[in-house]
Length: 236
Image (cartoon, rainbow, N blue to C red; front, side, top):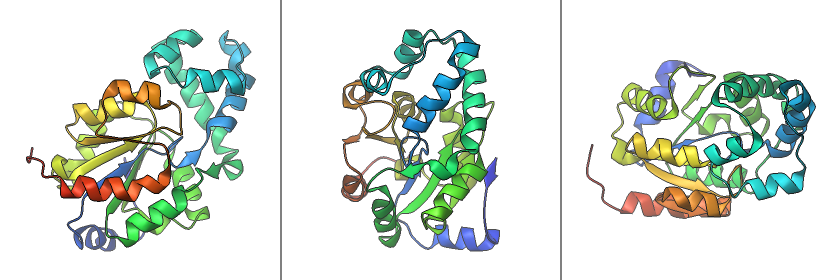
């Protein structure tokens, strides 16, 4: 579901005041540095799911794999991935106050907001987790919407649902994510993809999805947004 804060009219007014592109952000690994906490939770649960624990060093190597290869390497089926993911998210909620922001992401979001770019969040994490985190770092008012929680729809359809709700042309939208499946979702929903290489997947894996932009530092976000805006794209 779409989760909002404040009067709905104010949100729509805010979203309509600018014609600059819309950047939709993934949350875990893109804005929130949930990797280390997530690994700790994974290791706590591993035995009950018949899986092996992993070290931080192994996790760094696994970032070179795309999402499907990563799950195969860990012996996680798609069904187990859904159940395990839900379990991890539940435990993560109890530890969100431990999670820090990706270094440099806070300033980058503030710069994008001040420059008039429209911003939103699309995440499988819970709306409460996302809202609490953004509020803690003084960024809640920078985002016009939070589309969060587990959904029966895949990411491509969820992106399309948001665009329909907001009446935004896909040619004016860029999805920002840290996983290869984020870039796959951007391509399937016919929006541009901005791959960030500081989260779940590293540059080697992300480049296999041929994203429109691929960056290693949040300081590059504003430059990419401006370059995206200046490059004409046919309307969908």
